[in-house]
Image 1: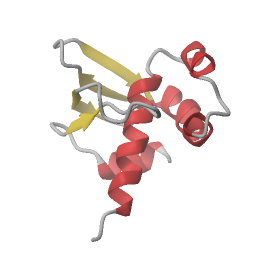
Image 2: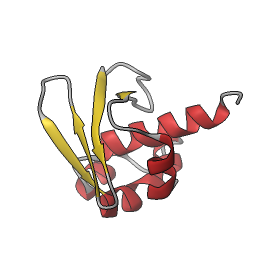
Image 3: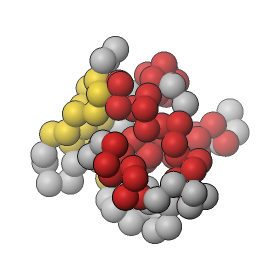
Image 4: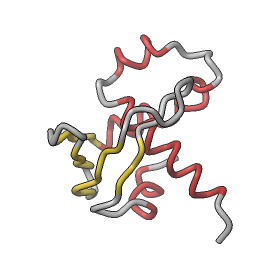
Length: 102
């Protein structure tokens, strides 16, 4: 999953469901407010604006499969970036969309 994939599939204004490997979709929804070459801005349910940088996405997104299968503990992910839950939710969303019939 690359930043380019994200830019092609996600648009500003789209709601994305929070996703967790063991809890499914139980965290609510965040909304994409901006996506450009360097960063993604989103709004979480509390109204707070959060920024996810491209460099963090590119570092964390490839770890999605290891996280899902349990070989990479969530504590290891949290030490890498505080935005990992958003990044994994985006990766999960893109993979779900890829599985949908055209």
